[in-house]
Length: 109
Image (cartoon, rainbow, N blue to C red; front, side, top):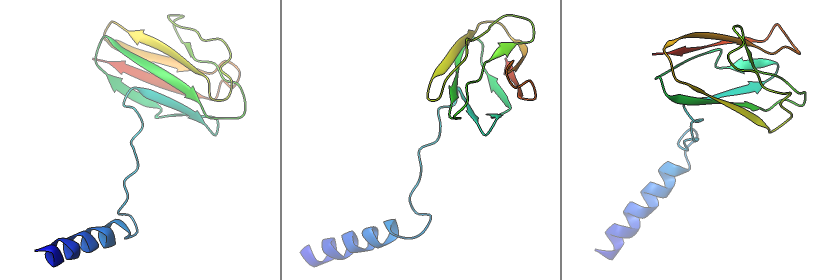
């Protein structure tokens, strides 16, 4: 029995060492990352009552500003974040006012 347990353990270790066998943690479902001057994802669908967090992974500051003025962040520096709770269903467009080519949408169901 002991030999069988060792063989099973060795097989499991071997599988874990195969390329692609390791799984990376998925980013939180309600997070938008700012990296390489892009909001990722550019469109996020959530349920009403959900808080979305934007995290700046760039070396430059960015802002998150809704097209309707519903929310507006200050400049978000590297590794800083901004969060907003979406209470009502709808489609919310946002941009970075420092880099207006950066655009995104939150769809609230």
